[in-house]
Image (tube, each protein chain N blue to C red):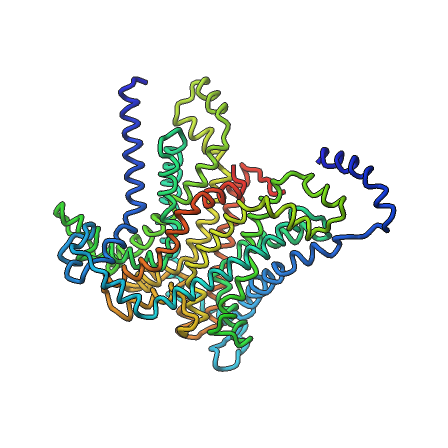
Length: 275
Length: 314
């Protein structure tokens, strides 16, 4: 290959990368630009140009309503579901990966098989179960079905526990430590990367969850941000400057988390063991 | 394993005196069950039990306020003659076909491009994953704005080169492709991560050997890279398909199934049947249909990819 064609190839490669990066970021950029425009600027300026002078009225309008409360509700839901996922998943994955017991393999395959059960299918019966328990439109109803962790989380953590050296527990076991002590004192400190990965996946999926909150909650006490956003259209019509201000508020926490923890997302891919 | 046993033997000899003082304790017998207990309860109560309920409920006629009435296979007979549901199934398949091939091929192409030494590689990789974390409901609003026929970004850009863009979300011909495009935008970068990890697991020697034997780069891709990417391809296809057959959020907030039912996917129809018409028995029948379809599609993929792949799940 001559240096010139190599250089053209390289230029082409970077052109594709820059185009891809631009397409990936463009909708976020649009949110940022539109959220600070007035209604007049919305039609007088091109969507990809800023409205000058920028206005903070849209954000102020959104923040003066019930939005902060819905954000708080979403944060509470996300925190509880993530804590539950981390605790219960770690225990189960540890048992499946490092302990011997009767029925272990059968139970593990049961868990793996349930990864295939579509959430769309369980939605109606879950609603009916919660209705039977009188938990519709309560925090309990919102949280209970998902607080005990997911089969996917167990699968991910088990894969990680399997990568730890086999002899790790031996010394502690000889000193008389039980499985609980071994897990908490010996293995858990080594699990930080895997726990970080599981945490970020759970945070993002909880924050983004929509169908279950839409079905199970109706009052403002438990309303989460996705449900509030979905009903925005009914309330304010097609006012994109206000909608984008709401979108900015809803996306901002996830963007911040992503910027700080994106390496954990890359790691989740490695953890599934697909090489 | 071997070093662990050896360690135990050595350490065991040292601890022999101590062990003799105490009766051997059967520690940890019940621990495993305690550890998996909460998760097992969750799986049984919130995944398996609902599956059973859905199937049982599909044999009943129940509109929530009245008592459920056993209806045998009536709901299934109704399903066979229900043209609107078959239309919804067609829309769902259309959505899958519009989104999955594109977001898989693009992801693989991007991964092949990025699988080399590039300055700023980590930066680009991070940017490509940015779409994945976006809240689908919020995305629906953003893309509604992008697709806005008058002031939206796409039609404004088209106007600059003298083209009048379609009405996108209010045009029955364009609405479904527009909704599918959001999925392509959201998942291409994340899928790329998996392909990239897969590509990096392929030994370089295989490519070198093929090159020495005179294989062109196209032959190397079809004969070496693609077959060895089978496990990754399997994972990406299965998870993406299971997700795409259940698409709901973007449809709900972008088009609400319209215009003239052109985006009414099956999951949206299930939602409407249950929570708008309160026809829970029939909604359960539709849920069963969706489950059977997802199950069959997944089994088909297991068989298709399984022929050429061995997995290590141990």
